[in-house]
Amino acid sequence: MPASIVIGTQWGDEGKGKATDYLADRMHFVVRYQGGNNAGHTIVAEGQTLKLQLVPSGILYTHITSVIADGVVVDPRVLLEEMDGLAALGIDPTRLVVSGNAHMIMPYHLELEKVTERFLGKNALGTTKRGIGPAYGDKAARIGLRMQDLFDEKIFREKLDIALKEKNLVLTKVYGRLPLTANLIVDDYMRYADRLRPYVGDTSKLIHDGLRAGTNVLLEGAQGTMLDLDHGTYPFVTSSTPVAGYALASAGIGPREIDRVIGITKAYVTRVGAGPFPTEDHGPEGDRLGERGREFGTVTGRKRRCGWFDAVILRYAARLNGLSELFVTKLDVLSGFGTVRVCTAYRADGEIFEDMPPNQSLFHRAEPAYEELEGWDEDLGQVRSFEALPAAARKYLDRLQDLVGVPIGVVSVGPGREQSLSVS
Ligand code: IMP
Image 1 (tube, rainbow, N blue to C red):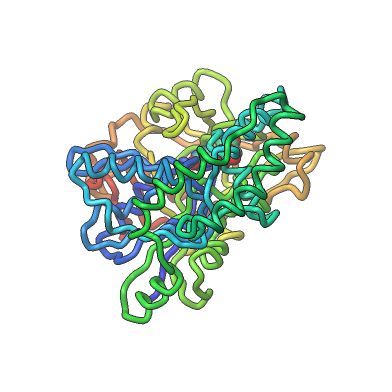
Image 2: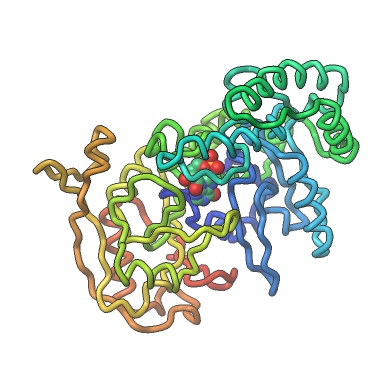
């Protein structure tokens, strides 16, 4: 059976958890492939609201095995807390398998991120301060500790000593902080090891065997295309690779296994943290989008910056990810605006750009060229079929589809499962 990928097409927070949840009925495996507990998925199902940061949203289903693949960075303390939180809600958290190759977030990653963000001052990236960047940095520098290291205390200690020696020098000599103590870290992580042992395994083989046995696999991205380390708005990006290609590298399966790449897009755009955002609306309409859409970060509670749908970044996301379809979320938020705006191209330095400008300076200076479309006043939350949407809302969706060049498969008009309307 083929595998599908769910990918954010903007700057994250597009509603990927909702899309995954919508598709989960047909899935046997839901695999998280990058990022860490910087992500936040909110799921509303059967009257329960669940906020997940690390555990894939498929955990709600008893028929699904949730997988955390090699390319994720795992804070074991957070993972255990999340598993305990699920158990407290009566949801079985034990159908989870974490790759032994996944790197761990260590206490010095959190400490270092705090001081380096402060050090950057007005140039700070506005990270989630979960240690994500420092953990991926150590992975690339080959001084990271992986989940499998938890189960050999001698190796764990050796690797920790190597990393901590340098980290403590930086913390004390550069930033004037106190050093961290290896013994305390070992004690904590060995406690995590005892509890996590049953959940760590070879996830690449598990997924591969699942595909050979005819089961369905959903590869779930975190963050979004514009936060991709290579293709996003560097340096205002995350330290992992959300684009669809990385789903395969992380899960450890080949490209021929994939048949659908589902791009999740809000009906407008939001961004948390610093960095360029051409269609950002600093006026009352931007505030209104934020209020109507309850645009506050799941992880940090920060207010999200809001703006209008940007077809330029969507075309870019369609190209980078090879999108087969769009899943449009939060259409209901756009009710009552009179007219709704869509950015069709950018203007910069006297030129028109229908595609992403070729360098960061042009993107920073990009002014959106807007098309105004007729709005609608109806509350969409009660709509239960695509055909029942107001004509103006359908026209808006048709225009998005034309501008992006990718068909819309599903439109969502609220947080509940029953509020996802499939487009036949
Ligand atoms: P980091 O991922 O914590 O290193 O943060 C880097 C940038 O990515 C910051 O601008 C964050 O606000 C942003 N970011 C990280 N995770 C998410 C997410 O799940 N949704 C939206 N923005 C995110």
